[in-house]
Image 1 (cartoon, rainbow, N blue to C red):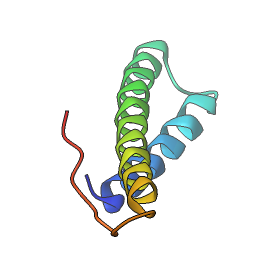
Image 2 (cartoon, one colour):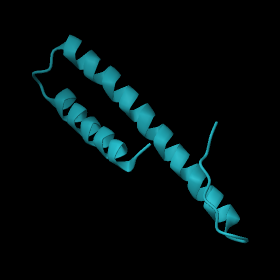
Image 3 (tube, one colour):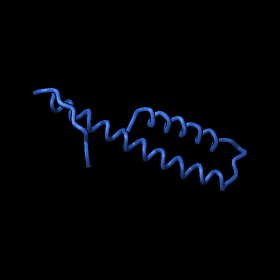
Length: 73
């Protein structure tokens, strides 16, 4: 996953929050925005968890040779 898509998800989350805070959002639209926001948040958390695992792998290897490997589930 790219940092660019993480940035795009975070920007979209900010936009969703602004729209949900607006007084003129009807309930149906608010529910759709909320569902989208939850999906974006889950995707962002997953990307951050993957990045954390990759960083930990590099740190664990720092005692020996520097190696970066893709983390696969």
